[in-house]
Length: 224
Picture 1 (cartoon, rainbow, N blue to C red):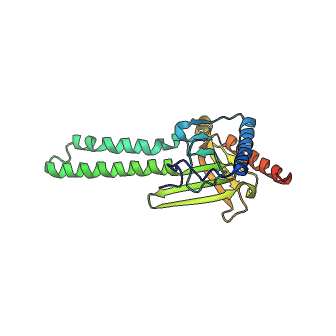
Picture 2 (cartoon, helix red, strand yellow; picture 1 turned 90 degrees about the vertical axis):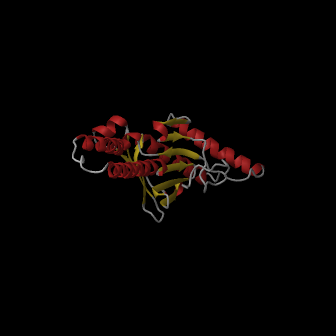
Picture 3 (tube, rainbow, N blue to C red; picture 1 turned 60 degrees about the vertical axis):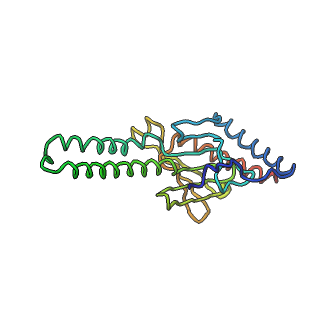
């Protein structure tokens, strides 16, 4: 389905000792960045903010690991959840008024089944959109997966050495209260801007991306 959660949990073969040394190099870089921002491996906000998750995505390279896996803050689902609850209650309220008293029972039953089926499909579509629309930060690049339906998704990549200074936007009482906002990253790739919308702790996300990019640049300058 979506380009994440490879069930095999493997992104390639182990390789020789040189590959193992390179892997330790990346581990050291990620550990150092997370330590500087005061983060540790964890899963928060119902899976909307995952630090160093034990998961793989299908195009993940051998020496690449996920540093952050982000979804929209769970509070952003409240709107469609309330709509679903309302649509589940509405048929009973309408029937209680007696406006369909003259309609045969079998037609009412069919109508209710169709109504609830459409409601269920809407709820599933909204949940899948939230769950599979993810933003991934690895030790090498940014991966933005925009999920629209089971047949259509858009995946955008940006290498960390191709990004400019990222920025976060948090505005309004609700966003400030629940600590979520947008992250915008300007890139030198085909898509000039890559974005993570309504994600938890946007300031921390920007800090981690900036530090990863800076550390990579420093190591390249030293020829490591």
